[in-house]
Each structure stands twice: as structure tokens, then as C-alpha cells.
Length: 190
Image (cartoon, rainbow, N blue to C red; front, side, top):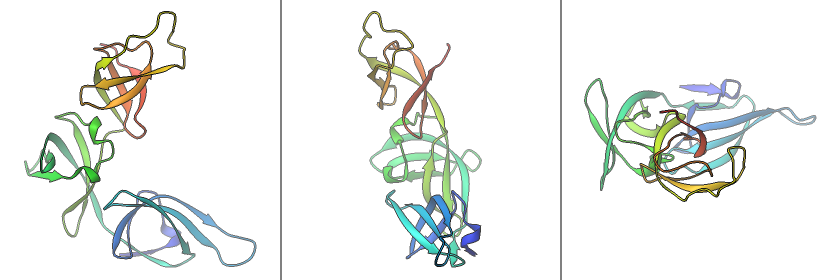
């Protein structure tokens, strides 16, 4: 299916130079002189790299049909990360290069897998915006530092991921972590 630059939106998957890209951001530009154009940031779905590309206004762009399907993360082995579709019980293995922040995934967690609808090929794995994980190791905060302090310390989570947390966080605390930027969000009440 082809669209024009007027139909561009964030999250759209397009084919460009025989590769698949997801539109991260775009901006319509109408300079005082010359024709209008669209400046885009595109994420390569094969290697995860982000590039910038400019499209002339009105140019046709090939859109790829992508389906988002929920899968449950099972385990990791030498083949990659293994997921199961909870409706069909079909299992697939996906390499780490298709998963952003894979070390924040916990066994049993539900994720969204974007699948190329025509070829049934997995393209990317998207974690939920926030995950709740227990702290397994961290250094003890210094006495006198309070919750309002901006000082941070490293903490290791139950999945093995390391994130920066406020000084008042202790081992055993359950934290809400933002998977988009790996930032501490809040401590979860038990």
C-alpha cells in the first residue's frame, strides 16, 4: 500500500531502499522559498539504528502492514528470547537486537510483538511502558539523605538489569521502572 507524505504519522512502518523502517518523528516544513518537504527520523527495524531522511512533499511512500500481537515472555536460551502466543500457544524465538531493554523483561510478562503481516516475520518487541521489578542488590544510602535528594545510586534488579535509583531505595523494594528510558519512576507499595 502506498501513501503520500500528507499521511505520515508516528509509528508507521514503511519500506525504503528495500529495508523496513518505523517513523519515530516527523516534521512538515514549508520554507519561504522552494517546495515543501517532510523531515523524518526513521528507526531501522533490522539493526535498531536511527537515521534522518527527507521526503519531498507529495512523494509516494510504501507502507508495510504490521500487526501487534500480545505474547508472553517465557525464557532466554542460546537461540534468543522465547515467547508464546497465549491464544494459539505458538512459540517463537527472537534475537536480542529486536528488543529494546531486553534486560527489563521478567519471565511471564506480556509484551507486544510487531509482526510483518505479509511474511509473518517478527519485527520488534515492545515492553509495556512500565514494569515492576524487585531490587536484588544495592549499596546502603548515606544517613541524612532524604527522599527529596537528587542523589542516585546503582541498583541491580531481579532480571539482572542495572538502573540508577534514589538513595532511600533498599534491597527487596519493588520498583516501577520506565522501559522507554530505564528510569526509576516510583517505589511500589507492598
